[in-house]
Length: 252
Image 1 (cartoon, helix red, strand yellow):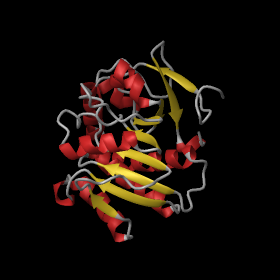
Image 2: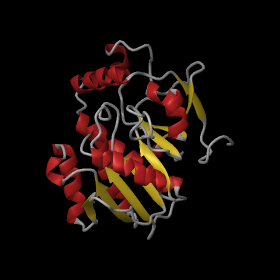
Image 3: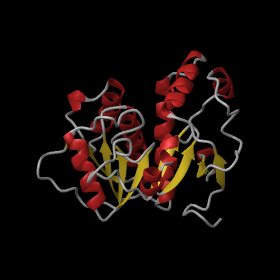
Image 4: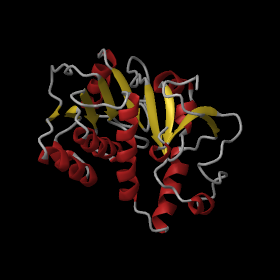
């Protein structure tokens, strides 16, 4: 299907705000689905998306993962575990020291360290190594209001790198884009559960590239209990931002 690289259907979905997403995830927790389970599924979906974006065979493909301290960093590291298992030559650059990561992110990092994936915090004066693709998992929604100097430096280095970038959730730096600090300029953005309104802003449209949506198991009941005017991620809605629905279960 024309219109996006992966040839998947385009859905018209009404975006939600970060506050609405937080309410939705909180309700999901009360229904017995812990956030950790959704993060794990997001990592799997992220890895499957990268595999399809690169044509399927990841054997010896050099990938560079930029990971931050929060939930989106955890998702990226969980995705990295699968990408490593599928034969990719993965390198991880952290935006801060490992001991500064959140607990879930530390746990995801430990699984990569255990199998020998190279992991290094950014150091002053570095240039990013060669790679066929950069995975942006620095700053997700709600994590971008006060980026560290290392995050800003990694954003600049990624944007100047010749490889394409795929962002998870949002292009890092989008929430605080101003002046000469551009957000990540992605070829594609894989967002999770439902698209955020930041992706429909002028800055979001300029930075996100092709937008894809991954199912991470939100229950239909969560939408009603969160008092959101959307019934389920399965239905296209009226004219808003184009998002490509991505699901590993159906291939693409």
